[in-house]
Image 1 (cartoon, rainbow over the protein chains, first blue to last red):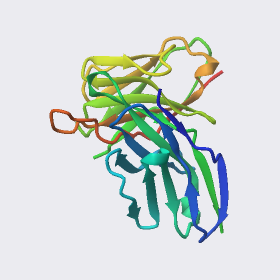
Image 2: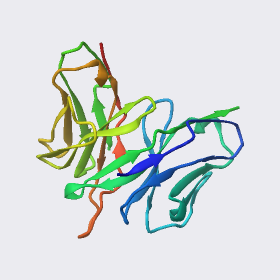
Image 3: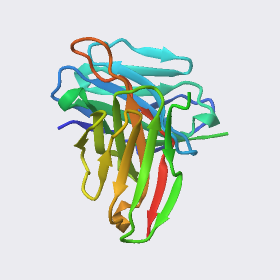
Length: 117
Length: 118
């Protein structure tokens, strides 16, 4: 069965520090997708990135970057020069495909990031 | 374009009462999903639908029923609420990517419904 482990339950940093959120996954599928979602204190879930298992290129979007390593089954997320607005719970998720082309997302338990001024 | 909306935003029920949560999407998405979020548990899939008129069970379906009579709506029902169903409920939808071996596209989530069962 699919499994996503986010070993860091809570992380606290000071503004402008870089921070990396770890995500390790388990799957028997050869094709799968990995995701990161952000849940700010307001509660909504904000999509950040979706990565195909065949694409191991690292991705950078502004202060955000993602490191996908199939060899270690990891999909880590780094925030550079963190800001107070980055404070949120971050979820890593793995796709699990089912009947009819449906996609179930298996979520990690989340990492709560607090960025202090 | 409102995306995914959920009604209501908050609700308090007494044990044994019933209610229906409504999810609506205006993106013409094929797939719709209901998740629940509990502290320290991440999100877990309750039921999902791959198209109008079809539904299927997810990871934690017991105590819930769903219906998808219209493509844009996905209803989650609690027939006899229990305190264990106190949770935040999220609806999501995704498109079907074109192609013969297509996979669902990214899931986009609604704002959530906070339900408390006393």
